[in-house]
Image (cartoon, rainbow, N blue to C red):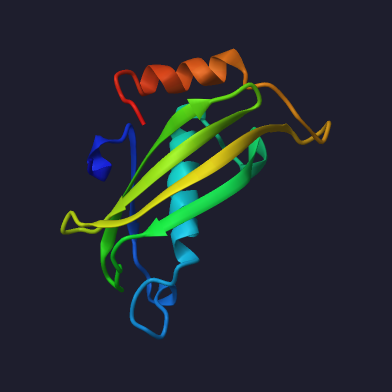
Length: 140
């Protein structure tokens, strides 16, 4: 399944600073690409105005590398929520090169969090409903 099959998409341009001495995107930078796509998704879906408005934290992040990306390339990051728990949800990602090849896949476990109370909280029903409505018919 290509990144275009995911319910949310973001385009990311590979910058000069993203490339390591071997001429390809450094492994750590893919987490930034996932973060950018995640931020755009929730900015759109939840009308987030500032980072302080995000109601969750990252509990775990994984990335599997399939082929190198290079400077000047535009990547497509597809993402969607694959699971809801009581206080958490999982996001899955696919990053494709501009030629359609699979570049990387990833996963983040997101934990709902109340910053004022400094504790985890249940996933709000309205939050879950908005995501499920947007992802209707998609299975991660």
